Image (cartoon, rainbow, N blue to C red; front, side):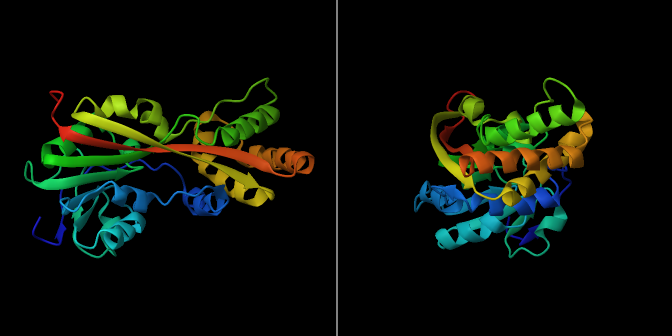
Length: 271
């Protein structure tokens, strides 16, 4: 890890959403109260002894830049399996699969996986690898969504899909985070760490305009195509439902539920 950029054979991470959905998320979350500064919260779980940090699935580096700002004394290494995502990021960065890190055993103080683990082909292998590279006293910090996070959006799209399909009930949207939901995240991590704690982050999004909600529904496009739901027609129907709800209630309300899992004592349970 002395070189700034290391190229390794990697696995591709599946996409959770298309570019429109990704762009819509900050717009929707601007309406959330209370808001949660995830990089600051994660940085706050680290101590001064956590000087070498791997940020798994760093993507475009949005969280990476904040983490480096919050912890200037630490060496925060951005890790991603996609070489193209690392091209414009300041070093140090590492191109590698999370389940096969070219990192010495017990050489890292902290491993971060911020909304990253559910993208990986083998979550358990990535957790085992995190436990391997961490020093005694090292920590893993991961974040994910609860299964019922933003459930009102799923309810809305499911109802709109049913209207369009002419069925009593439309298919229920499926999200990548369902592979590693907050409800079971601690149990999965406990296979490799002895000391695991969870901090829930909840909030309410209140939208008085359909636009940010409809933009966010762009993240459902790929799933809709896979299940045979006519996406554009479903979104148009969702618009009608939204407008009716806002006219009747004054706003459309969405509840958010995510969480941060902190794990210490790697290998303490025999993982």
